Image 1 (cartoon, helix red, strand yellow):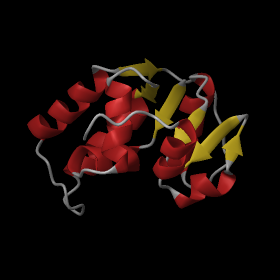
Image 2: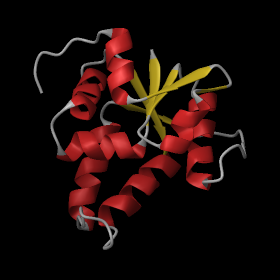
Image 3: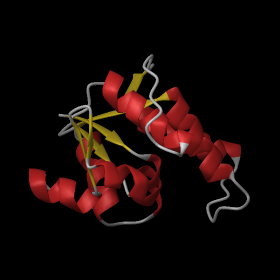
Amino acid sequence: MRVLIDTNVIISGTFWSGKPKRLLNTARRGEITYITSKTLLEELRETLTDPEKPFQLNEKETEKVVRNLRTFAILMSPTSQVSVCRDEDDNRVLECAMDGEASYIVTGDKDLLDLKSFEGIKIAKVSDFLQLHELSDPGI
């Protein structure tokens, strides 16, 4: 199953234990296929280094996070363009999911969650996705 894991979930799973980390671990184990794009990874980089955000990682720390994700991610180069959401970053998520033939977008973003689905792609919170698919949890 191909799943786009949104930046907010990636960050939660990187810094804290719990369901987002469990989701990332299922991707690491190959139980789901995590898809992303250069644009989404750049958004992650910007968020992790943003002095206004609590993370404030330096470039070396940020690259370590991104390199780790790329070891199990499928990197897409979306060509579609959508303008469904008021937040352009959310449109980039939809484009990547659509061109990457994702079954799901897993996110905590309210605007995306309000859509419920897009072009046949289900949009779900981490807890709902994990519960629906009863993914294994050998530990966090």
